[in-house]
Length: 138
Image 1 (cartoon, rainbow, N blue to C red):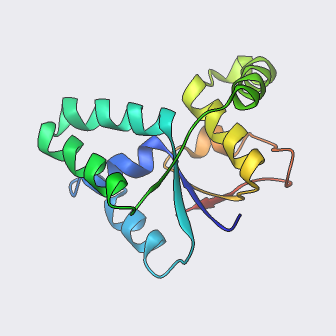
Image 2 (cartoon, rainbow, N blue to C red; image 1 turned 90 degrees about the vertical axis):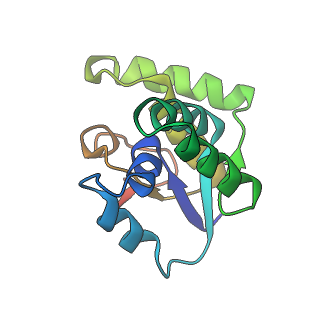
């Protein structure tokens, strides 16, 4: 699948105009064709952060963007959870969490190579099964 997989940091930066990554995130998405895939784990985490730090209106804008098809919500299936568990084990020294591990698992399942993220530290470590490394945007 061609497209972009967005992580929590990307969604937060897009929503917060004062975030240091905001302009870079907007520029990274402009003019890039393909689906903007968001794992349900990412949506949940992003909604929590937006609601906590920017308020319920920001959280609802993200929900509406998903409902209107701007973002393609991708569920976590059992094989993703199994793969996430393997990733958590493999990278146990790097303090990887479930959300990041599911991003990797879903990217592998869907064949997505480009990840939109602010988390260079973790996502540059990963060696996904379907490619040498992720292309990290911005």
